[in-house]
Image (cartoon, rainbow, N blue to C red):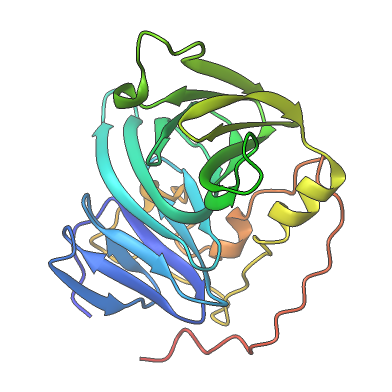
Length: 257
């Protein structure tokens, strides 16, 4: 594997994960410590999951059948912060925002956050206004802090009643059929459904060292040269209900070539 001077890494994954390089110029199966650059995309297949770390300490956990593209990533050495934009094409994503002004874009919505944790998903669901119809539903559930949910500019017209909402911790906000839906509290069923999609991923490699092309500060290990990536797993939010997840497929030896 040829290392590239990237902005993040695919640190841990389960089953089949594909890296689409440079706006789909080429594709390859993911390997541990594969580096990410702007315009790369990561896709998880059925029963697959992965965790992405970025140089601003942000973490993106992807559930199965999901696809995320790195649309924009600008890092400032002066402020030690980044401005990042990710596109969630399909599936669901659990985001831990690091030193970043971070946005996640979908086909209809923009989630903007700083120093928060949230889950975002994009799926086909029943139309809330017309039960016999289906529509794309794109939602966020805030686990910590506050997330701004906005309509994409191209969907805003003179008749648009709501352009943005602020989704507080423990709430869910959605865009459905091109309109913002009133915020609602996340019930126990919501929490169980979505948090169960992101079980902790454990590496079969006890410790890993960041490759030379990827500066240690990018993964927050300035004082310890060798540090298990699993040590950076974010603690479960207090609002999460306990969930038992049984993974049928064995975890492959991700250290193998």
